[in-house]
Length: 209
Length: 209
Image (tube, rainbow over all chains, first blue to last red; front, side, top):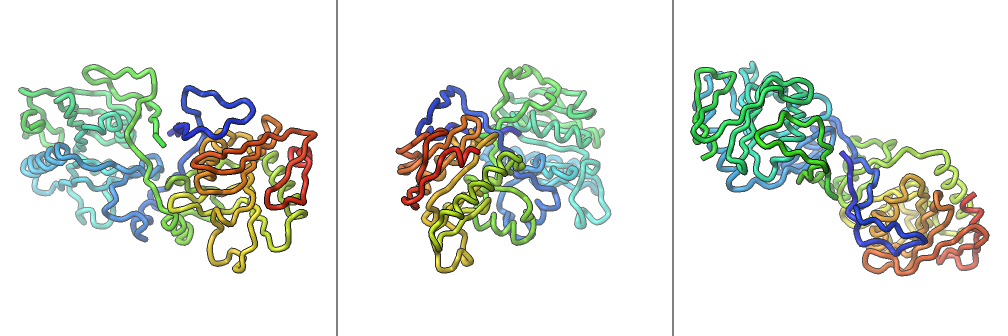
């Protein structure tokens, strides 16, 4: 990611002052951490459990506060999916997912496949994910442009973006490289299905509330 | 600082695909660390001593590798300052300076006042700095637009930017708010003086090499 420095109060101009109408492009890179280093930050308490952070391409990003509407949708979807899932499946809410060496996002919701130790010894990885859901309001751009590409590249098989602004559920499947090759947009009145739970049909209205 | 997401391989377009000509502004901020947390990262070895990083507004930034031209100027200036310092003063090269809770830059060079503990007990702070020098080649924008306001705000009394591209030495004094109210540009053929060493006169050519 490129950092664009907001031209903070311009310093006393020198010689030919850089008369930039546009913010000055500064070539700065944030320090990148590996997943191991990032997890260590949590263990030694430099990043607390109450900090809402994600590791994206080695950069530690703050996730922003959870709004009322976002929280309501996540809570309801959790209930819905827990109710419909099979007994051995695990529903993981706003918990980390490990994707390679430099990514540890915290998706809003994941339906995970059965795991012998119930993920006590290691975080879930892409292949454990049956369905990943992001509820997007202010985070829409980020979810569509950054996280979707991250999930596709890692091979997460099915991602839903519950797009609150557009009042629709976007279903992404068939990851290939950094994109999903199949996209479906489901609107109120329609129903959606989870690939891993073919017997279950959910009305979109139940998801959008 | 705002992070601008490079529109990575765009996801499969949904409904009305947002076709941004400009990079999409993503409302994600890098996690900010306090100076104490940042120093802890070093202590527990998550960031090694050989890593060139700075803490700027709570964000951990990687510094560029040092080019031979930059290195030569820093070396030469170090020698010049060492030759001219008053007994007790310390010369600090590419070491951290603590400026408040969220800033710990690593200036190229500092002339520090005498301190009884010889800086064993704590990092130097703005009040300890008699002169701070940044040698700027590729880092010029960063030095002028980010670091200079930061040094001014902290009250560093005198900053020089050795501007290699413009072949000049920029002398900033009288910090007020986030700017220096007194700026002088010195070119080859001229001489410069250090506020804290009024008896010393240095030819600009000795600095620019």
